[in-house]
Structure formats: structure tokens, C-alpha cells
Length: 115
Image (cartoon, rainbow, N blue to C red; front, side, top):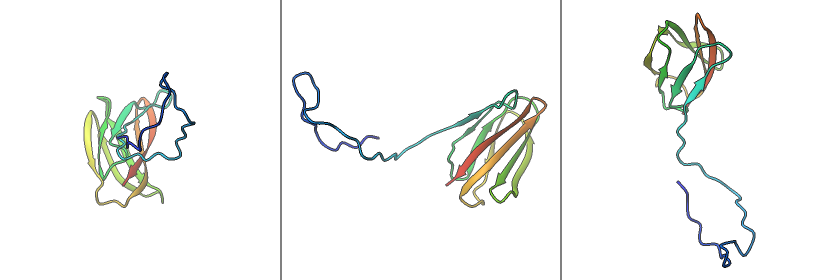
């Protein structure tokens, strides 16, 4: 969403008459997905990121170990999965987490933010 802050006077060629400087940007809606593959590691998509506690992870059709680790280093979720699945982390504190994915192809780590 772009907030209109007013009109800028322009000349006949549609060029601003005075220098225009953007001094701040406010992002109100940001939808991102993490897609990661390190070397020959696990190719996966995780979304939404940041999340409010519910994430979806798209994994290959190959048994993949999924671990989610908080910043103190405690594993808060562990499972083996394949394909698309959903993880409920609403009982976890807000902050930064590390999602580790590993299978016979290798390993991948993705940063996850819970808001």
C-alpha cells in the first residue's frame, strides 16, 4: 500500500520542479516465503514467514526430518514428513527460530520469525 503524501509540482516534461527526497518508508503488508536449498540440500518452501505461529512447509516427496529450534537452542518441534504439511507453533514465544530440514539429499536451514 502506498500512502499519498500530496502532489509534487512538475514541468511540461513531467519532471519535478524541486528535488524529491524520500525520507521514510513504512511497510504495512509484507508477504514473504522462504525458499531454500544449500548446495545439494533439501529444496523446500516455507510460508508465511514471518508468521503468527502457523507455518506451511512444502517438502520433496522424500522422508525429511524437520526440526524447529529456538534461539537458546532448544528443539521445540521435531517430526519426519514429506510433501506439504502444516506446523502449529502458536504456543511458542515470538522471536527468531531456525528450521532444520534434512534427508538423503542433504540439509537446509531456514530462519523463521514468529510474531
